[in-house]
Image (cartoon, rainbow over all chains, first blue to last red):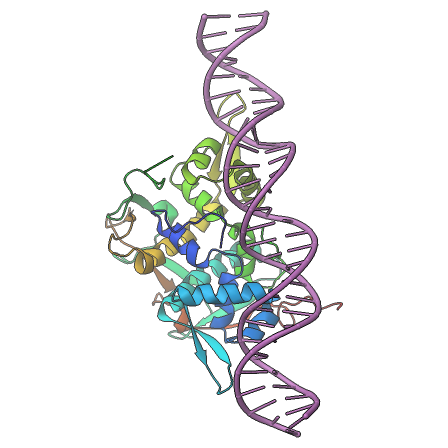
Length: 159
Length: 159
DNA sequence: AACGTAAGTTCCCTCAGGGAACCCCAATTG
DNA sequence: CAATTGGGGTTCCCTGAGGGAACTTACGTT
């Protein structure tokens, strides 16, 4: 958990960060997605401290992003993505796309993605759900929605 | 900066996290994107410690995500998104979309987005750059790319 | 009975984040 | 021309999260 709690802000970005904003969380999700479902596997692959891994897994389970389930009659558990968690992987794909483009350098992307539907190795593209045209940061205007806070995100009371 | 350095991992997700993975960084980008370009504005809006804000801004500038430029003959500076940074906002849009869907609750999304091209208030949709069909976590297979590490991401030497 | 193994706990240490006070520089004001 | 203002940071101390390694628990296997 970050030192400052983001969950109270009226901002879906801040709230999302409250779920996967701590260091390691996105990498844990990535690993679970590619089939590293067990504590020991995650710890070995990431090199994360066992204590922190425990915290992260508990948090992700609490948030409904992962599900913890037994896979043996011994006390053994594995972590799998829920639907909520699987949709977070979309976010990881976009993250990977940006990293591939801007950070991969000479060597090229470390991982490629093959799309089942067409069989091609390709990337992900952002499009408007309404008209299907490309939709990027410069193509949109943000405006206050129904869940907006009165002014911004500062707590209104006290001081 | 996280305690563990992610930049050495052969993973575009990890590398991207090294750029915007610290707490506050995505929120700083969000604010800059919506027009809060100055130190004082950012500090006031986010409630972030001045020290940490300085660190974050410097880091984002070093990474080429923000540009720091004077806006007065006095020593006054503002921060603007570079192209690299603007493309990161795409990531924020996906983050916001996930938060809107899974975390907004009764009140509904705090912010809406109007697409210039069609004028509609809509969201963002992930599609395959090759075939244009929807592309989500379950629609793809990851496979090693040219920049892949020999086995995984562990440093090969020592121990 | 001894051993192995996955999945955590516990403990201590260090260093990043929070918070408040302080500093620097140029322009404006009296 | 001294004093003031205000943006944009530094500096300082304190707390608590992350790293690391050792220890524990609960079951199976030999």
